[in-house]
Image (cartoon, rainbow, N blue to C red):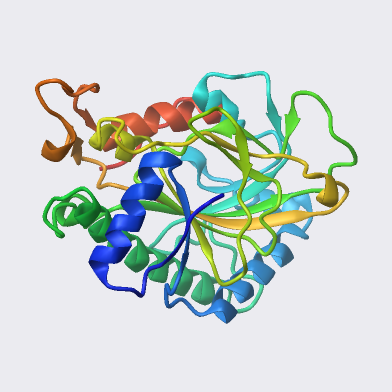
Length: 301
């Protein structure tokens, strides 16, 4: 079962619960986050309106580097984990602040304003979570602050068209790990999302509409020397939803591009030396994104 954490509790209690979740499965659900459900639902509804446009209309928001609109077959997530056999059935609109008219649709009305407000609220929530992460790792609460004060963040509006039946090597999103620090996911119906526990079993991740799904990414696993898990996960054609459209809002939080990711002091010892060489955040992200898109991607500082 995926742990549920009310982050409106006192910080130390929340930090202890986060530590337990990140050391065992790397996924947890949060409540008490303070983000208005009506805003989330409005952004989700407007995203569906965008995905209902024609291919020609959507393709005008395609830009380089994995931003803007990516149509079906434009990305294969399993390839980022070196599995090129699984094909994704999905499309996405990838947005970041500040608003860029080349990748941000101007319609439906208020889409840009609502989505920008939502992204900023998630940036603030991610910073709150990173401070809780610091407490969970027994370091200063502000330890991450100067490493994420100019974070690279992306909100992915995701549309999974109906799949008529389950087919080998066909998935809504192939098994992969996320790349950065943490992911904040919302879906009106998360059935089909599965996370792999340490025993290798796939566990269903089912959240209520007032809950966000949180999971940590590769760079957080590097920072913690595998103390915390960047958990493989996937989106499969869940039997009750086969033949139905599925959609979600996924927010990816990454450190500053030039942040050096090296083992945190509390996560190594003489008997447990650092497992990963230090790496700039942008170098890791460039490698992962390039694999998933099948072409080289460079990230600006």
